[in-house]
Image 1 (cartoon, rainbow, N blue to C red):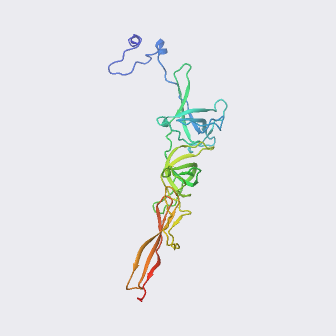
Image 2 (image 1 turned 45 degrees about the vertical axis):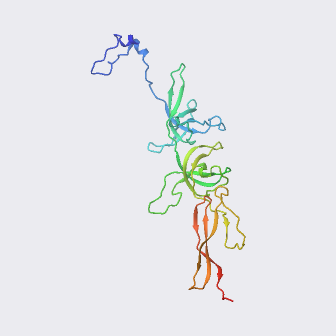
Image 3 (image 1 turned 60 degrees about the horizontal axis):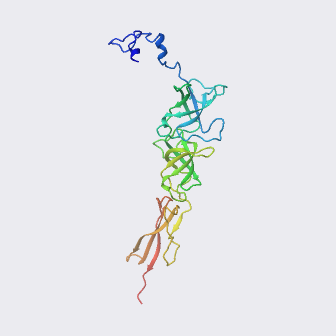
Length: 314
């Protein structure tokens, strides 16, 4: 290498210049210099969840994706929002495996099937060389979800990811979904119910969480992890109702962790005797309503029961 650097065929650079003279590498030495590629291959890719040739096959679990080569839709104009369709020209149409550089460090696999990405082809320096494909598309980590009902597993729910642009205004009351619309089916995991039985979140409620994968269902659901939400208020347990006249202690109990149901709890709020009034001992009762998460959401007005009345002495 030192002979090449001192070859008389290579003009020495001047002290005030950092570049070689034109055509310095022409001739025999040009074969020893690796040229830059004359073009870079790139195309619109459509993310798949299985190989093109076998829609029932499994997907990758790491930063690799099956990607279908796509082209802009034929009817698009120069100013239209990009919409792509699968390439159909024989010999050009293909499905490739491409690595998402944005997920390479964590080896996640969070992009949704149908997403559009810009794919680049890189060439290895092997002999013969191979062509590998990459793109750089950071996945969406957070999501707003609507819970549509309980899933088969405890603490897991079926639902939908909401997308689009909200039309909410600061001058009006919040009315979800606030202009958002359902875009993807989701499996929602409530971390508050880890290790518990049952389901505590209300169907039709909304929550905010993070995307952390996809299920193996066909078609797959996006997995979203949330913490809490609006607790269910349906079919509550009742403890110590006003109609219970038994003189025996009530042995019924409730636990958020084991029962997983809402509860209506009747409690004595105050006891009153007014000698200047009707001289009757009263107790007042309120109903406290807790949702399935154990959060108080309603307190009733008082009802009055007679405990005792005054009587004349014998």
